[in-house]
Length: 337
Ligand code: P6P
Image 1 (tube, rainbow, N blue to C red):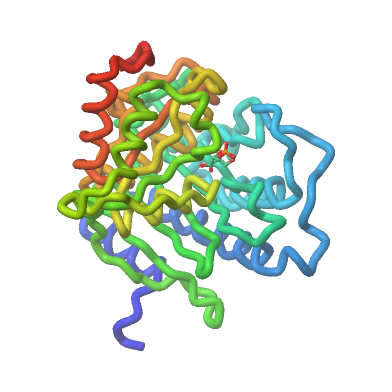
Image 2: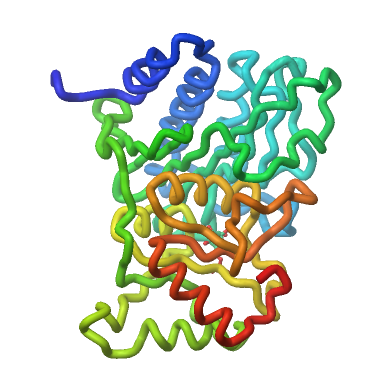
């Protein structure tokens, strides 16, 4: 028992290292942890209670909303409303911004409350992803544009993965920690203290069903992954969960690369910059990896809109750099490359 460190204890210990800390970010992370426990409880019994299936509504991307999408969204917004810390929430499930606490809080939170929700009805992993920014100090009247900040300005980011176990990973820019939920005591317990992604991995992850929509450079790279070359661990294994949080969590721990490209089907990519790609890029870069849109670092992108999409190639540094070589050699079309 003495070696167990709970999420709450860890956050307080980390905060105590900064005498000037107000404790507000700590409280925000604890609030997210509380919502995660509630969502995990519902996810783990979704097949029993009447919470599977679709609502008759759509999100900002025109995707049908599942009951658990909306439940997770409500729980996270409710948890963030508990204290005057968060002034504004931008969620995949809400078209506009959700203003909280009389807009008095100092943090702006982006979130994908239930990532990979198409997996819900078949009991495959799903996740929640969050990203935290400071509100511009000079601004008294909050505007949506105050939330349009590049990923490099994130003060915290993380995800919860509802899989074979429920894990919560986060960073505040001082490395990556992972906590595993022990449902018997209702606590997230520290399971990985200072996570570092392998510099190179032999797993590639992409929806190869879309191969014929891809640029030549990506097609050639995937063929490279499939060649037989024991010296470089090829052929790689192919793994694709259909939940970015799950695919990136595996990549974080085992190495390799996750790819969701731009294509003739998704000219700007499908994944959302602010509440999928930036937070997971912050985690992966803090663990020593790399995340690009084909050329630029994801976290350098200056967003033009709250819900914009981007291509993303994220994972072990050597794997991502090898992919970029293919894009250069095959002059891949993406204008940002
Ligand atoms: P596809 C889930 O809907 C998501 O946003 C990511 O979590 C996941 O990586 C991707 O989309 C899956 O997309 O086109 O393979 O179903």
